[in-house]
Length: 218
Image 1 (cartoon, helix red, strand yellow):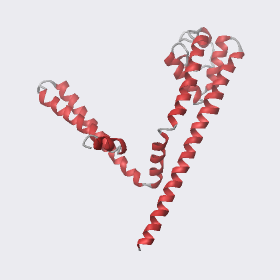
Image 2: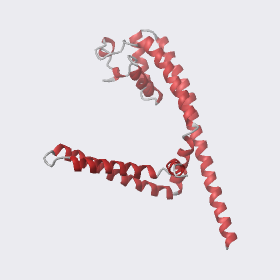
Image 3: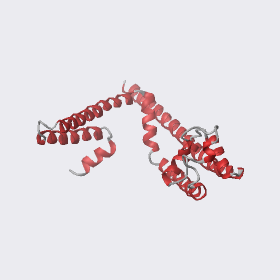
Image 4: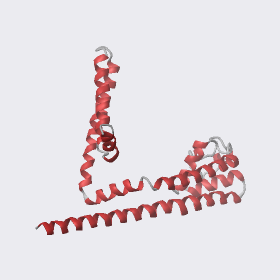
């Protein structure tokens, strides 16, 4: 009972986490302050920074008051309800990212770099777009993320078409757009909207039940 109580408290009451973090940082900063020497200005400045972080975290606790606003309460409950089911959708998204990243590294790896002649002589390609490459797994993920948010994706596609010298490589990006945006992103958005509507109806039902019980009590 003594152990299960705090565990349940931390599991179901998120408000405890910021205060616990503040207390841990407060203890560490106090111990550090006691152990530090007065002449060590750098240590003193680091301790002050820790206390500033503590104050900032405690100010964030004011966001809890937003839960009293009906619209914000619905949004918070929607996010809480989405955490579990949406993990599977993100797993599917990461799988698509991984497959296309591996294919991209095999096909386009090492062909896009800062001094690439094709990019240097093409005025239609903005500066620093060479960073959208498939030279490594991290860069591939970044490039695919830029494509999935549809941030000037046609410029990136044209850049790779010019480098490869074949318009057929457009189908690689079209397939990623189809699986990533048309299917996965739309499913996540529609699932989120449906969850929001369900939570909103649940709040309305609770409100009506509360009013009905209030009328019975009167």
